[in-house]
Length: 173
Image (tube, rainbow, N blue to C red):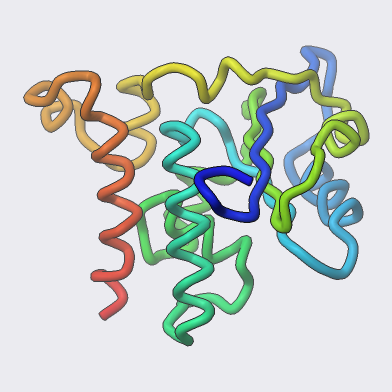
């Protein structure tokens, strides 16, 4: 449980010799998910912290429950919110896996231990990924321009990511 939400979040790094393409990694993840629940993976370079992930999950879940989600899959809806966009193609570019993705964020709901998922995907634990402040590269990847960042203290950058999650609801209206 994170922030009272029934989710688990883990960060992992791919080994340098891991040559699997992103689609193979995603298929492996789907196989681990089974029939129920959420098990989703994102490029960690586009994640501004644990609160960013939790907020995206909460917004996506609420949108689905209220029948206003643009997509009817919790993982796909969460991707839109995490990316701060209502366009799937843009979300995939921002937070989806790509050839050079080395660090990943895995989200599960209901909450569960993710060590076995990490092992099955041949990832090493990387909890430090979400421990620090978001970088300018992360924020830019989320569509937030450096000129905007320059007028705010680093401590407020995560709030911009949270705001971009919330704004997805307004874009859909």
